[in-house]
Amino acid sequence: MLRWLILFFRRRIAVKLTLTLLAFVAVVEVVAGAYLTRALEERAVQALEGRLVALARLLQDDARTLLAPAAAPQARREFALRTSRVTDARITLILRDGRVVAESDRPLEDLAKIESHRDRPEVRTALAGGVGRAVRRSETVGHDLLYVALPIQDGTRTVGILRLALPLEVVTGAYASIRQVLLAGGFLALAVALGIGLFVARRVTRPVVEMQSVARQMAGGDYTVRAPVRSPDEIGKLGRALNVMASRFREKIEDLEREQATITAILDSMVEGVLAVDGRDHLLLLNQSVRAMFRLGPRLGPGKPFLEVIRNADLFDLLEACRAAGGEMVSRELSLTTPVERVHEVHALPLRLGGEGTGVLMVLHDVTELRRLERVRTEFVANVSHELRTPLTAIRGYLETLLEGGLDEPDNGRRFLQIVFRHAERLGRLLDDLMDLSNIELGKVTLKREPTDLADVLEPVLAIVRPQAEAKRLAVAADLPPGLPAVSADRDRLVQILLNLVDNAVKFTPEGGRVTVTASPREGMVEVVVADTGVGIPSTDLPRITERFYRVDKARSRELGGTGLGLAIVKHLVQAHGGELRIESELGKGTTVSFTLPTARVEEAA
Ligand code: ADP
Image 1 (spheres, helix red, strand yellow):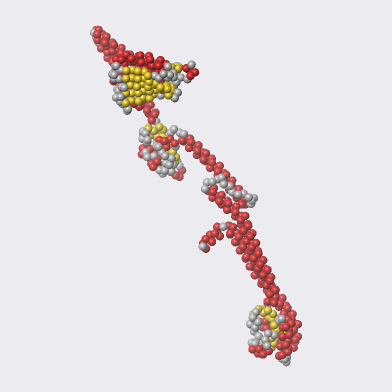
Image 2: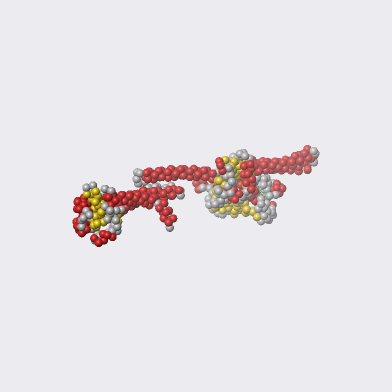
C-alpha cells in the first residue's frame, strides 16, 4: 500500500507540484506563526514588565515604610491586599534576608511557612541593586506569572524588596484571538495554495499527459495523431515540436513505403527469379517469380531460414560456393524439379551487408525454353540431314548400278530408273515441305483470306483421296450441317490443311475402316473434325506429334510417302488463320484431329 502510494506520488507531476506548494505554504506558516507568537509573547512580557515596574515605583515609598523593622505585620498585609485588589497583581514584600513579610495571596499565619525567597532569580537581581524579572510557573497560583522585583532603598541601603507578579495570561489572553485569526488565515492560505496548486498543475500537466498519450501512439506507429497546442508557452512549443516531428516522420515513412512498394513491384514484375539471403542464410527477399517457381505460400518468406523455405540442396550448394568464391559471381545451370522440371541458369553474387556478414543475391533465369529450342534446332539439322540422306543414298546406289552395266539390262534399267525417279520426287516433296514450313514460320506466307464455303473446299480434297480410300475399302464421308457459316480462310491453304489431315486419316486406317469429316459452328468459329477408326497414336507421342519430322513409326511413314512435316505445316497454317489444332487419339481405336477457323464477317461475305 505504502509502495503504491509512493509510486502514485512519484508518477504524478500534478500531485508532486501541489504537494510541494502545500508543503511550502505550511512551512512558511509554521515559521511565521512561531516567530509571530514568540514576538507577541516578548512584547507582552515587555509591556507587562513596564506596567509592573511603574506600579512598583509608585508603591516603593509605602513599601519602604512597611519594610522597616517596626512596621506592623497587619499593616503590611493590608497594604498587600489593597494594592493587589486595585492592580490585580500579586504583591509580595520580602526582607533583605529573603523572608516574606507580606503576600497578597497568602494569609498572615502562612507566612512563617514560606521558604526564604533569597534564591529566587528576580530577588537575587533586586538584591544586587537592579530590577529583577522572571517568568515562572507559580506553585501557589498554578499558572505562568511574570515577577518583577524592585529593591527598596533607604538612602543607599537596601531594606527589602517589593515584588509584583501578574499572570502572563492577562496580556497573552488578548493575543489568543489574534492567534485564532492567524490559524484560520493559515488554513485559508493552505486551501488557496491547494486550489492554486491543483489549477496550475492541471493546466501544466493536462497537456503533458495528453502529449504523453500522443507520443505513445506515435511509438505504436500512428503518425496521424496530433498533440494539443493551446498555449504559446514551453508546453505549447513542445506540442508543436512533437507535431512537426510526427509529420516529418509520416512523410519519411510514406517515402520509404513508396520506395519499398516500387522496388517490390519491379522485383515482382521481373521474369527472373530474385532472392537474397543474409549472413546467417535467412531470406531477406524473394520475388513473385521465385514464389511461383517453388510454389511458395504467402506465409513462407523473408526472415525464415533458406532451406526451410526453398528445399533445394543444389541451390544451397551454389549459395555456399558463392561465399567460398570470395566476392566472385558464381553461375551454374540447375535443374530444379519443383514442381515441374525446369532448367534454370542461376547467378549468385555476394551481398555486402555491413556488420551482418556477407549475404548472397541469386538471380534465377528460366532457360528451359531456350534449351528446348536449342535441342529442337540440333535435332532438326540432324533430321533434315537424315531425311535427305536416305533418298540420296538410294539415288546414288541405283545410278551406280545403272552406270556399272544396269543400263544394258532394259527391264532392270527401267525399274531402277523408276526407283530413282520416285526418290527424286520424294526429295522434291521434302524440300517443298521444308520451304513451305520455313516460309510459314518466318511469316513470309501471306494468307489471301476470303469467305470460303467449307463444302466447296472439302469436295475436291475428298476427290483426291477417294481412289486411295477405295483401294483400302474405306468409307470416307463428309457431314456438314446445312447453314454452316462460311469461314475466313485462304482457300489453297485450307485445301492443304484438309488434304494433309484426310490423307493421314486414310494412310493410318486399316482396310474396312471409316474416315469422317464433320464441322460445327462454335462462338464465332467453325470447328472442323477429321476422325478415323485407324491405328491411333500412343499417348506418349501425342504431345510431340506436331513437331517437325516427329513420327510414330518412321519406316512406315516413309513407306507411305510421308515426310513427317505434314502436321507441323497444318498446325502453323491453322495458327496463322487464328485457329487452334487439337489432336486426340486412342491406340488401336482411332484418331480425331480437330481445328478451328474464324467465321467470315457478314460484310466480308457480302
Ligand atoms: P507424315 O508425313 O508422316 O504423315 P505428319 O506430320 O502428317 O507426317 O504426321 C506425323 C505422324 O503422326 C505420322 O507419321 C503418324 O505416325 C502420326 N499420325 C498422323 N495422323 C495420324 C492418324 N490419323 N492416325 C494415326 N497416326 C497419325
